[in-house]
Length: 137
Image 1 (cartoon, rainbow, N blue to C red):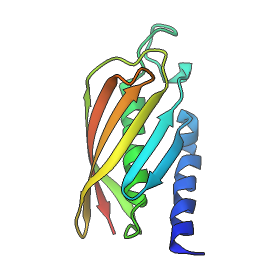
Image 2 (image 1 turned 90 degrees about the vertical axis):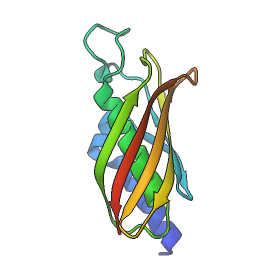
Image 3 (image 1 turned 90 degrees about the horizontal axis):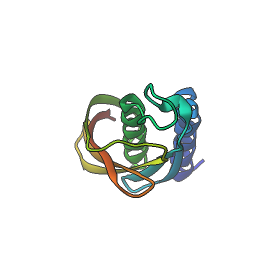
Image 4 (image 1 turned 60 degrees about the vertical axis):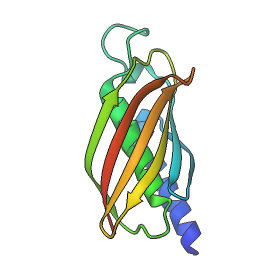
């Protein structure tokens, strides 16, 4: 199996992981340090208040983390990774909408990668941005 096939297989495994599956996450693309991940709207990810309640911040943070992971694993040099830190800035409410995370590896070193993530709703309004730091090998 080629390195590209191995990378594609890992990205597929990331999408099929139990937590990603529970959130319904779909990795739409992952290549060259960039990734796009969609979280479809689902009543199970809402705060209290019924179908018009905002999407829970924890679900949004999880989306950012998975998008960052997909971006870092799209790099040929990545053979292992673990989240070191994640900082999420919530800039708006997401109500009754799919969310899309766009992640970009900003910098990599021998052991650390810094990934920026922007999360938007279906009207392309910015809902959150995140800075994720990964330990890589």
